[in-house]
Length: 221
Length: 185
Image 1 (cartoon, rainbow over the protein chains, first blue to last red):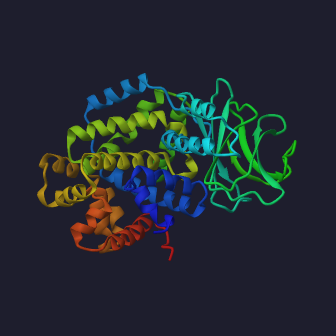
Image 2 (cartoon, rainbow over the protein chains, first blue to last red; image 1 turned 180 degrees about the vertical axis):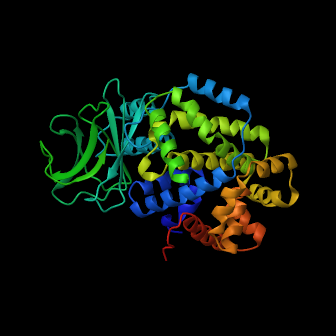
Image 3 (cartoon, chains in turn orange, yellow; image 1 turned 120 degrees about the vertical axis):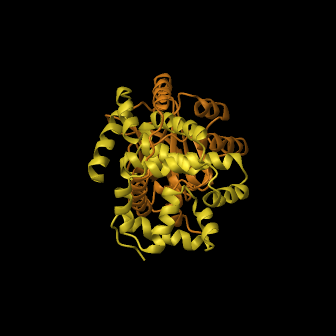
């Protein structure tokens, strides 16, 4: 079944958690499904309002107490995906241990991604990017340390490299190079990332550029 | 009717997403009925439904900043989560096969009459009738079972004795029709 056909199951909450996470990644880069989800979500909402049942008053008390005790998950980007990250990291560590092009040391990746304070940023594909790749960054607001994961990215063309950028108030800051061409690539960003800043990815000439010259392919803020 | 509701909820959700805890009570009051109704229909146990509803609201608070207005209204974000958590809960308690059997049987056996009466009593009949009036007979059947019966599409397929793919295509066209959208072929 095509992933596009999962809109109804997604809206009706019928996907199992793994499928749900996968479909949400798909939504990041499929405007047609996103539009469908919006329409069907509202139909589902209409149905839910028509079938409302008043919960007991004590439930309200319990919910408000729990909320007062619980913090919010900080997300710079669109949504937090901690569970996805835990599995991603397990896979990433295997790749790092095995691999050559992976720059991040497993201990750093592990520490940053496993931190309860880690914030996930999904860098969404822009109109300039046509592939299936997914780029995410998790960072620690306290230190600015950040890990970028690129998944399903086509290999960079000969003589070119993907380059990550941290984009704040000033000019974009180069934050690391990666080649693409593997299921999942993980690098530690070479420039700290702070709340309020964005992460972008471009294609640049081999060796990277001091300032972006290619189209922005992914952008998350 | 629903646009005003959507706008109001989006506005409250935006305040909640900015960390405004005092707005959370307002959000709760606006959607607790639909959330509890949704969960109760799927789970069919009042006690478990209260527990799941509690967890859903806690998750809404914790993940409020992840709400992306481009992808749907605040109500859709919350109610999709409610349905998903309720279905997850049913699945976690039984194997997939056993679950489909149980959910599929629920309509015949009416295991909890009290829940059933409550669900019916809580129905906004006029609203429901308006929604359903836009649908053909076969579309209405799947929508009623899904929204007002709390069945998954697999369970509906079993109950009606039609292929899951047929249920899905009816549901797809029904959801679009409910929002007055043209069917894309």
